[in-house]
Image 1 (tube, rainbow, N blue to C red):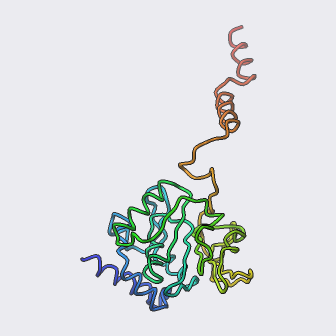
Image 2 (cartoon, rainbow, N blue to C red):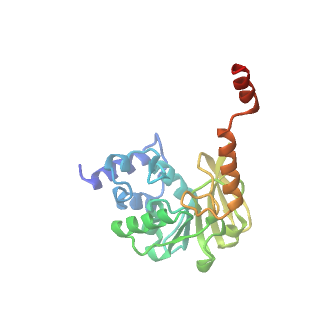
Length: 245
């Protein structure tokens, strides 16, 4: 079956009353248009409604992406910041709705930035700007943003991101620790909830998988702990000595 037909089936399922996560016409058109298989190489995985692990990152299920966008409610021409570029699919959906030149995406992992740029270019969204940044601080170079989408859980929306909202702007993020809710926040801090979710926590500088370790003390502590674990404990020496008497 052609990818376009599979996409149609995918979105039809997301619009069906059993799921009902795609409600807006703009989102329906966008998800029917973006070639998701350009972001996930295995076509069956690309169009299945499940979370997928790919290139050491979590790719959100289509239904989760739909929930994020329905809460975000972007409109044509809005300036959008996506925090957590991942493989680039969410940024592509945003580009279909607001226009490529209006979408900015950041990720803390350099490898993911490279992958997202490549995937977006292959899919026809090379105009999306993707940069290597600690998402906690947003992207002040291009602020203010009409919409900010955070694809990782936080205890509270980072103040830097809220400060980068334009008047009447909207930030959507998973908020909470063990129990998370999808929350929309405006520039005044007012909140609206959109039900429970489960996301991985937002990484800060130094926590990403490709981070360069700069803290020698931490490294030395880890090496000492490993050496200590490999040494015999006192009772083991006593036992050995007793055996040889």
